[in-house]
Amino acid sequence: MSTTPSAPESATPGPRTTRSTSEAPAPPARTPAAVDPRLLVRERGFQGYAAEFRRKIRSGEIGSLPVVVGLIVIGVVFQALTGNFITSYNLDQITLYAVGPGIMAVGIVFVLLLGEIDLAVGSVAGLAGAVWGVLGTDLPDSLALLLGILSGTLIGAFHGLVFARIGVPAFVVTLAGFLGWAGLQTWVMGDRSTIPTPIGSFVGDLTKYYFSDIAAAYGLAVVVVVAFFLAQFRDARRRRAAGLPHRPPSEILLRTAVLAVLVLVAAYGFNQEQGLPLSLVIFLVILLVTDFVLRRTTYGRQVFAVGGGIEAARRAGINVSWIRTSVFMVSGTLGAVGGLFLASATGGADRSLGGGNQLMMCIAAAVIGGTSLFGGRGKVWSALLGILVIQSIVQGLNQLNLSSNAIQYMITGAVLLIAVIIDSVSRRTQKTAGRA
Image (cartoon, rainbow, N blue to C red; front, side, top):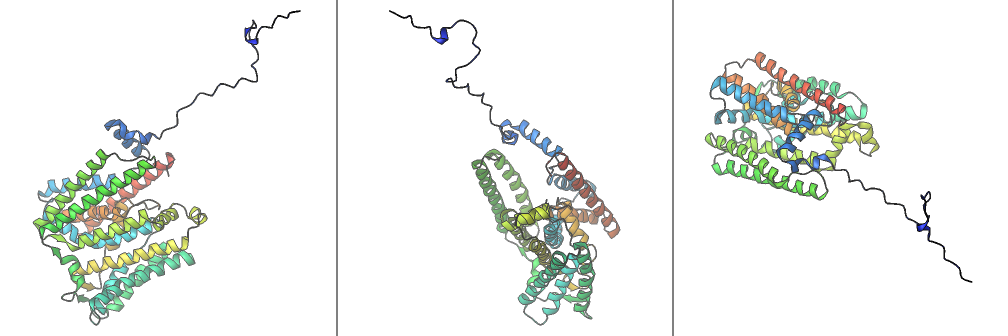
C-alpha cells in the first residue's frame, strides 16, 4: 500500500501566523557610529572653520581672542593719535618695562588657577630687591642674588602653609604679607633709601645687556618658529593616532607662517635699536618652562584639577595641601625674580621697589591676558599678553603726554573690569552650554 507524501510546510496555502523556531531572526538594521562633529570641521574647509568659530563663541570658548583684538585696537588707536607708536623704539621700551611685572604675573597665574589671590607679590619683590642689595655689599653677587630669590620662595611657602594647613583665607594671609613684608623691606634697608646696583653685577645686566649681533634676534626668531611647528605637528600626529580632533598640515603651516611674520618683524625691530634684550630671552625661557610644567606634567594637571574642584581632586588622591602650598611658593619665587628685574630697571634697590601700582599691574596682566579669577582656566602666556596690553597703554599715554598716574590707573582699571566681565560672561555661557 502506497502513501502520498505530505506537502512541505512552505507550500501550505493561507497566511502564515507563526515562524518556525529553527529560523534565525532577521539582524537589526545597523546604525552608523556617532561621529564627533569637530572631527569633520576641517574637512569642510572655510565653512567648517566658520561653524567651529561660531560654536566656540556661543559656548563661551573665546580663549585669548579678546586680548589679541585689544592689542590690535591699542596699536591702531595710538598709531593714529601719535603717528609714531608702532616703532622699534617703543617695542624696546615696552619690553624693558614689561619683563619684571610680566614674570611676577606668571606666578600670579599659578595662584589664580586655584581660584585664589596673592596680594603680597609686590612686597615680596621689594623685599627680595632689598635682600639682594644689602647682602650684595658684603657677599659675592651670585650668592646675594640667590638669597634674594630664596627669600621669595620661603615667603611663598609661609603663605601657602598658613592658607593650606591652618585654613586662613589666602586673601587675608597675603594682605597681611603685603603690609608685613613692606615693613620688613624698610627695616632691611635701614637708613639707606637707595642701594645702587654695583658695577659688574649680573642684576644690572638683566635689563641693560643686549645681544648686539643681528644674528641673535633672527636666530631666536627661527628657533621659536621651528619649535612651534614641531610641537604643533607632533601634537596633531598624536591626536590623529588617538582618533581625536587634530589640525591638518595646511592649518599648521598657516599658523606657523603667521607666527614667523610676527617674530621676524619683532627681531627686525630689536635690531634697529640695541639688539636682542637679555631680559626678553629670560622671560621667554620662564614662560616656556612654566608652560611645560602646567601642560605636560602630572603636577600641572593636579593644579588644574584642584582649581576645578577641591573635593573631586581630593577624592582622586591628589595632595591638595601640597598643591595649594606649592603655587604660593611659585608665586613668591617668581615675585622675587621679578623684583630683581625691577631693581635692574630702576638702577638698584630702594624702599619704594615693588610698591605703587606694581601689585595691581601683575594681577591685571594675568586677568586681562585670559586667566580666570574663578580658577581652573588659564595659561602662563596670559601674563605675556596681559602685560603687553598694559605697557602698550602706558607707552601710548606717555607719547601723548598723559603719563599721570591718575589717567593710567583709570584706563588700566577700565580694561581690567572689561576683562573680568568677559571672563564672567564666558563662564556663565559655558555653564549654559554644559561645558563648565
